[in-house]
Image 1 (cartoon, rainbow, N blue to C red):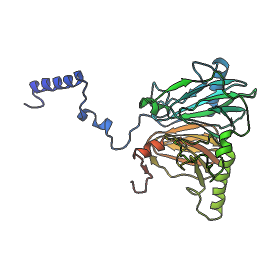
Image 2: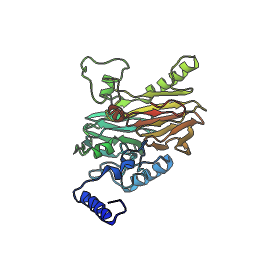
Image 3: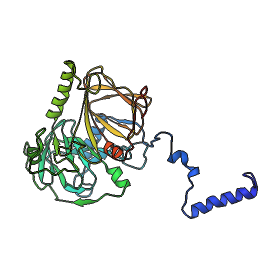
Image 4: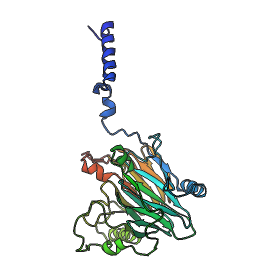
Amino acid sequence: MTATDPAGDRELAQLYADFESYNLSPLWTQRDDLLPFVPSPRAVPFVWRWSELFALAERSGELVPVGRGGERRAIALANPGLPGTPYATPTLWCAIQYLAGHETAPEHRHSPNAFRFVVEGEGVWTVVDGDPVAMRRGDLLLTPGWHFHGHHNDTDQPMAWIDGLDLPFAHYTDVGFFEFGSERVTDEASPSVSRNERLWAYPGLRPLSELDDRASSPLMAYRWEATDAALREQLALEDAGYPATVGQGHAAIRYVNPTTGGDVMPTLRCEFHRFRPGASTRPRHEVGSSVWQVFEGQGTVVLGNEEHRISTGDLFVVPSWVPWSLHADTGFDLFRFDDGPIVERLRFDRTHVPGERRG
């Protein structure tokens, strides 16, 4: 009996039909999909323009109320390579959230971890487990999983920011829980400094009353003033001839959990990068995906084989193993978040810079 024998063909067809009827799938028909030689993501590189996002968020503010049901006026970045999903990548969710003047987004909590990053504006407080935290330009605000949180705008001006969550990862692994909280927020005060900052926001110092390590950072606000100063001093040290930057003209920081020195949340990594005018990165491939937002300045990003000019507020996504590089036309500040903690904990992490030996 040969592969061209009619009886053999019938038997082979019956074999595959039996596989299907018993809910089985042979590896030899799908090896290329399941075990590619290098990562082959369905997500694609993509750029979203802040001017377009903000205009749509404004229109939503006029037409869509904030309250129970939808809960948030948040518009997710939907990757064209992941049709039918509201995901930026298979592990990362990112959205622009918009709160009009004197609006309140009610409290709720969920098991996915979340943060907010503010590219412009102020006047909103996010209330995390009853602690009001001011949101201002350049701030990173955390809402670790299963913390009640809501937002209130104390001004007559709208405010928008980006939300980042590990929602796709939580959804895929079936670990998600959700619970409604207060119809408004449990504390409508608007202090300049939150209680968690008063306890935790002192570099290198830790309260003796809180010596247990936390899975997520207990500090809910990483202020722009500290981020800016750290980046500025790295470049000043570079000018003085000391090793302080990750590349010539490229300063960068990682936001960390003060109880462990590790990432701010178990599933999400947050960083900030600053480039001098004319500075560039070498192209690199990374396992895992990332989302970037331009905080200030202008430059270009090369994603795969395509170059994109980007400026303040624009967002772009880098899927796993897609090569990327950056070039600064002006002073260039960018916020980045990624799934590094997941990838590294599972020991799947790998980075390749062409011209360097691959690990």
